[in-house]
Length: 241
DNA sequence: GCGACAG
DNA sequence: ATCTTGTCGC
Image (cartoon, rainbow, N blue to C red; front, top):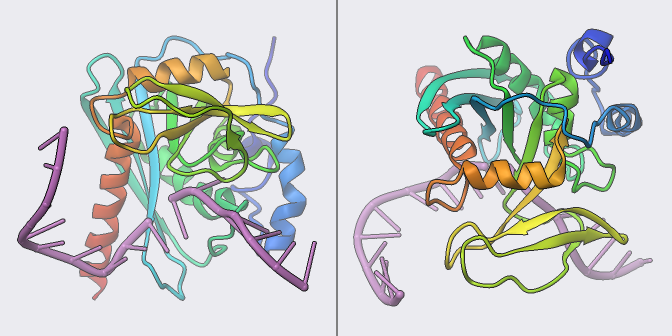
């Protein structure tokens, strides 16, 4: 079955046309959310991707530094990384994070020499009031499998208390729907919240995230992407200042 | 009107 | 998100 062209190819937001205002972004969300594929539509995952951005705390120019890293899925060894810097987009607004981060992430993705089979994104995917967390947003725009791994809850509640041991998990429920899973990845650390981004089911997402853990609270791909984005920002500041 | 609110 | 070194604890 042929899949519809990517949002990028279709000229949908974040690519050719980016919203300049929050109101405009909100109007664009339903069309993007409708393109999310919540089932497994991916091949063997050999190259893992990680995505994150770093910003200055108070920045009138609204500069975002994005990093995309790739790792060998089996060994979790780093393969490559790429960065991109964009400015003048939307500020951080809960629920509209994708519009702020995706443009720079797409640019970083395009700079990667080898494309990841699946991307772990720092932030929620489906666990979002409009079903369009940054992980879904990025996945739809690139038409690539993505998973959201967030460090705190945007919407919903954890259905049951989590045990202290790594691997403990419980559904993240909102309005009677299971949007994701709270997962304890490390003893003594707060859980992370896993939700689907695009072209992956929740059970598969959970399995892949657990396979990407290497003893830290965050899976390796997003952990490395976080580091890379931070370095990119610091280097840019040093070079500009 | 009040409280919540990824990064 | 970011400001930030050492330090308390398993």
